[in-house]
Length: 423
Ligand SMILES: [Zn+2]
Image (cartoon, rainbow, N blue to C red; front, side, top):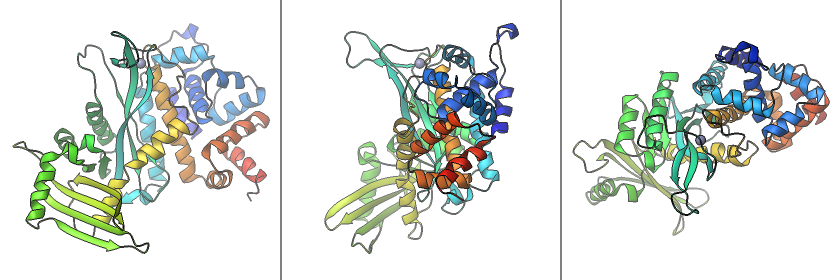
């Protein structure tokens, strides 16, 4: 992994004048990635820690870092790097998992992979902003005061039965030069789909997303990329569709299936095929399905979706599981990076060009690295099981790196594990 990262960072063009360079670009990038991987809450804190000689030696051995820049230097250099330089790493990491045959377990509905997408805001401020920031009227302030924010649309490969999720490269919802109208989540999602198709042209994907996405432009974009979709369809967003389905119900053309499980709960499935999505002349035809989980008279869960995939009594249960896997991006990605050690909403530095998004990308890459450890490394898996939370494990890694010089990652993980009885 050290080699892979080094190779990638060494390829990033450095536009600084040679004589003004104190720290190599790869050291700046590796330093930032190491900081996010070790889950330091601030740049200054990380910088202070690196003064300890033992940690300095570990940064060289584990991360190939020869010198750590100051927090100001790191921000200045990172702000100038084109964010696209980091995007390729998501594909490189993905290929590593693919080549190691770790992706097969993520297959669903035969040969497909579930790719959940959703938008999220990772920065907002009434005072700090940059030209890429989205702008809206500040709620709590008088007059024309603005609030600045950064949002992304994130994609992740998931499987309803697997705890680890595999992030793909996010797309920023951002303002660019000369653009009059502000960017929006739907447009960013369309760019994201094109980017995913380019990076993984042969991967059979089912895009799973919430009701914001079950609209004609998005469905057409999915079809143009030869992908499939399962989108939540809320009654309030789809009045025509629901009226049509109710009409089909009266004609007995909605298929109904139900069974009672061992706990006495009733699972109810209904579906209809080739229903117009909206009232327009060129409306796409979608397959509609609905699910209720009932405990006696009480409805414990209820939702409805649209899809281009065919529906029948053999696949309907799996289709509902696929539709319900949408929560995984909120829980396993956004909630984890916001509340479980990654400090993704902390302002490590905003910059005037790319800093805010570059730090976000590197933090997401740190999350991806942890997922790779979790999927591929037995010692790491053992430690995760025995040390509880991921945060606790990385707290240990941080502390050990201050005390002992390790030859490589394997040496570090084995040392901690053996202290806890691993053999
Ligand atoms: Zn900004």
